[in-house]
Image (tube, rainbow, N blue to C red; front, side, top):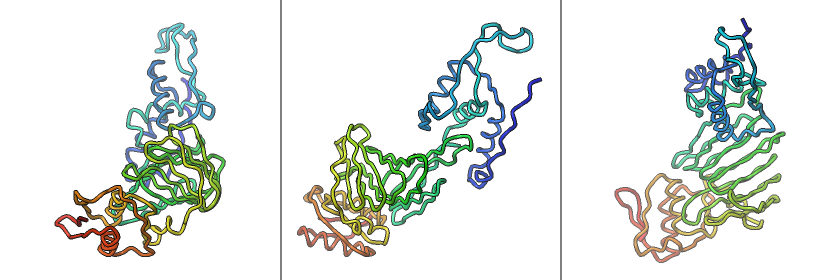
Length: 323
């Protein structure tokens, strides 16, 4: 009787997860080194896992089909029946188990900063991310010891990154751009709204930005910014920027640099966790520049906006209205 491969022990760092029980069930499935599956099912499973994880064929074990003749009557394949040979039975088991129980179990973890709060996140590679209000970060929950580290994350909203240098590039995906770094500090904002897009500002190190569907890649030097605006596919040329203003949200400040009123109001809603309506006569595309070293008083900010644009504001049952 063939010997079973030695099972990797369940990682203790996963035992503290809220769904540790489900994680261990998946891990138990990984103990079988040669799960039975048809070639078509295996190809589909492997393709799906590669698509969801971003695994490259050059870095990871690939399945190969091989026809062999075996003795009949022992529950073995008949002569000429294709079956799978894997460099690692665990690789196949992981693919099948992950797809069977939902890839999110061992795949991604999503963290969110709610309205009026910020959130500090330390990733597995030691990189630090600080999320602004109303922002979320999805990142690999855990990398198996036999796999190359996965340093790809996705961002919705705004965050400050302090990336730990490593052999593998650190990649941030947004809804319309991709940022690639080796070790650096930068601010990244990605909002799919009026006046939005993906805005990158570099504090130190080296970073590159490209549109998700574009052909141009831009590399920034410290103190520069670039953006992939809504409706475009390529980043803007690098230009100098005021990092102090861009990073003011990290110290309870608030800044909007030549942004439309509609986008500013949306940011204030996320920052203070209240609804702010614009009257029908107010132009949401009217652009403003605001900067507060401390922004603890929403009424004061609304008052300044109203004064600057000849408007008024009032409190409503749900929040405020500019009219």
